[in-house]
Image (cartoon, rainbow, N blue to C red; front, side, top):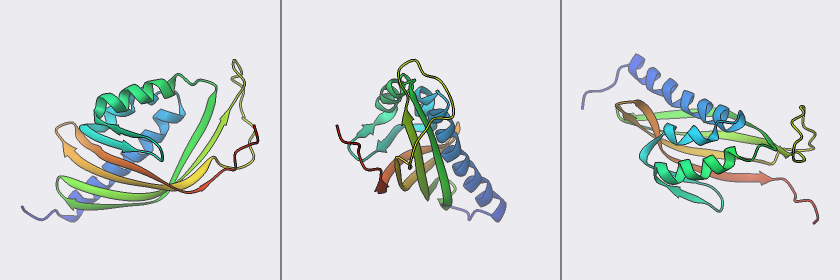
Length: 152
């Protein structure tokens, strides 16, 4: 396989970074049901207590998430480092802070009041170039910090 030149590598890195940003925008602004479109057909999403295999499972779960309209969230990703492995494959690690608040049903007011982020962690992503462009093959969420749960 021919080596990638610097411009091709930068374009691949930027396309993968854009996927990370687009994922956050979709979940935060009420379009979580379309997140599966950012994944390959055989993509995998792994959370703390949840594993979704394939685009259909990813879509089904995120459609349900989109239905939680009382939730206000903002995913902040930083320290994004994409490593292009080949012209067809890349991986990345970035830090993610999730600010999340569930409002009372029917309340759509902003700003939402909160004390601390819901969690802080890392996103471990793998990407593949497809005929439609770069897509996630795997996203794994690893938590480093989590908010203390309120007493019931």
